[in-house]
Length: 395
Image (cartoon, rainbow, N blue to C red; front, side, top):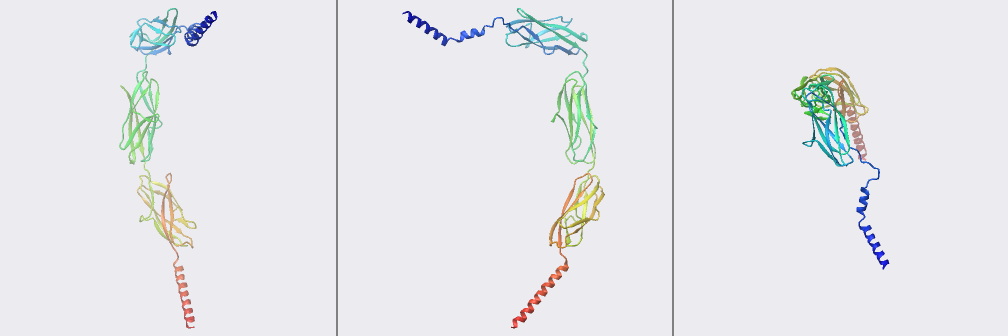
């Protein structure tokens, strides 16, 4: 009987151990080691020293933490005379904050100096008082006269750029906020005839940007022709405006003429004739269809193997805009050249400009003397055959 009683008690203990271990373990985990202390109350702000202007209100974000859940009373000691201080939790005015022992609590301190507050440093103490502990820190607010709003816009290098009628012109400029307040700056540029002017910051086109006090931004001002421009100067104005503050920059693009070379023939047909083994003249026309002179035009050629090409005037000193110059190339195919069409390329390269070329189709003829000799040989062969037929035909 005693044995059965012992077994029943043992079984009951086993069931309790299997099915109800969690509360026991939880209570054991919740118990802190003997001698351990909770983290003390603390209050702080990321920027404990602030600079403001006359008549400016300052808001100071505060953070509180404690290893013990408790309600904390807030106050400001040594507040300068005439100043007003209040704590804000959300949109409400508060004088205490609850810390839950695990997470930081946040609250804002709003400070309003009087209109006649003196310039200089003003020290005060922010105090947090808990149930059994206290924390504090010193907050310094310096009042000084802020610089009035001011913008400057300057160009790096010359304000005028030169280029061809189809070139894109890029200017680098610096926009600086020289005042004591952050500004939202609106950017704009006048648009010359047939030119599109855009303003870019960090590779992106912009029409406005935020510019903190005493900071600057690099700008790229791009003037892109919409058509081929005529020679002349195209001025435009770039403006940066923030409220009543404005900065301007006068820029200009100067379009200079550009020579345009064309290699052709007097009648426009790129063809000619040559006799095998003999020099044959080929007339070439160099035309400047641009708006500026072409200088130092050098003539070269590419021809079939065994051919020779020479120029009466291998270099032309200058071709004025809208004018033409005629030169002669002397082409000599080899004596054994086969009759037919060949291609000879005439190249012309002006000084400081690109190479221009034209392909001429050259028809090669062989000498007439060889033709006569051939006909004679054929006639002689026919005569020999005729004599042979007549003689042997009688037999």
